[in-house]
Amino acid sequence: MAEALSPTELFWVEGMANDRTDPVTVWRASRAGGTPTMMASFPYVTSLDSVPFSDIALSDDALILGGTWRAPVALPLQGGPMRALDATELPALFGWYAGTSGAGVFWSEPRPGRDRDDS
Image 1 (tube, one colour):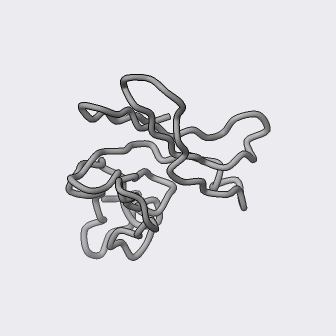
Image 2 (image 1 turned 60 degrees about the vertical axis):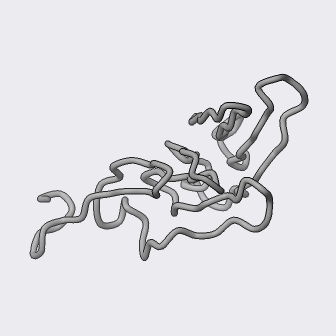
């Protein structure tokens, strides 16, 4: 569903296979070949959990994952636990998802006194 390339690796997100209750998974593989490695799995709990991250990007030390229906996270490239990015709510609850880069995940917010549909 989303891909990112480094000079040596390919990263991608998979989700919504079969009956749409499969977990969303994040993978990495060497561009030289070999067996892919799963970096993370996000188990299915509700129908929104089957929606994968819509965009990913590389920072110096992590794979940044973002999208409209998922809270943004960073997966360290050298292993270790994922970390939540500094966001208080999902963008879908109060604004529009704008994109993901190595610097983070970005979204718009409604103007003061306006709701999401009138921003």
